[in-house]
Picture 1 (cartoon, rainbow, N blue to C red):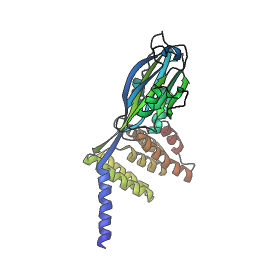
Picture 2 (cartoon, rainbow, N blue to C red):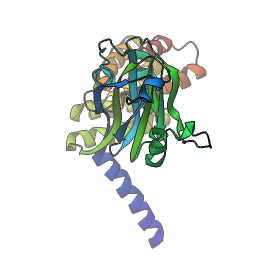
Picture 3 (cartoon, rainbow, N blue to C red):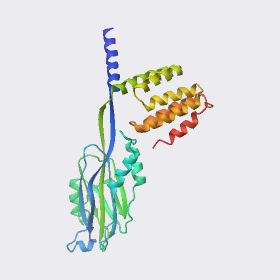
Picture 4 (cartoon, one colour):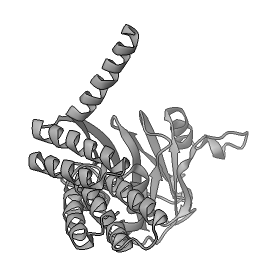
Length: 321
């Protein structure tokens, strides 16, 4: 009996502790290599004293979730072009991030970066290899051209060949120091390679919730328990008690769903609009919206003619980034 009581106490303590704190997750961009122009001779000219290969050292910061480099090329005698990779990624993250947290997953970041980043068109082909310390030395020594046999190793993710411009994403290697080997594959023509490197770093901060917010969450949880028991009116009452202490988006969504099931469609719509506004300002909005949609779909499956439910679901789906 004592053992059972101890386990119950521990579970209660853990739940209360979870209610008392909130983990805020943010993704931030860090410029690792500022836009840099690397001028490379053609292979034949490099044999007479120039160079057709160069490298860039990349030190990846702690908590890197993925990183990118973008580059474009131009003839050796022409000017440079602006990449603005760091600026574009920072702007994308800012547009997709809520006030106190992020609305993106790492998968979402990759999708948004690849969709939104613009790169100036290049004119000449370049090869860029992702290597470790040992193999970047072999790359620079041109061991792959040794007539008696030789080679260097590189990572396929992060390597491009015979490419004029690109944005390249790497998430397999996110720790330590790596090297980008730049090569001019042309025998005669020199090129400029304009390159920039940016990492996306994940940070998590534990925030202590206010007493009013903790109280609101407890009332909100009690309300949802009543909803699951089929007592929609009681769910509304507990949700209103929660709102007296602190306005939470998910609590208002629960109240709105209860109103729908009580055939109070007009009131439900107003509450859902308020819920949407609150969720967008609070942490992890995409996750909360997904849960709200899931709850609506569950009730729609039970009662396809439930008034207002499908319309509200479509409105909420528009908010998911």
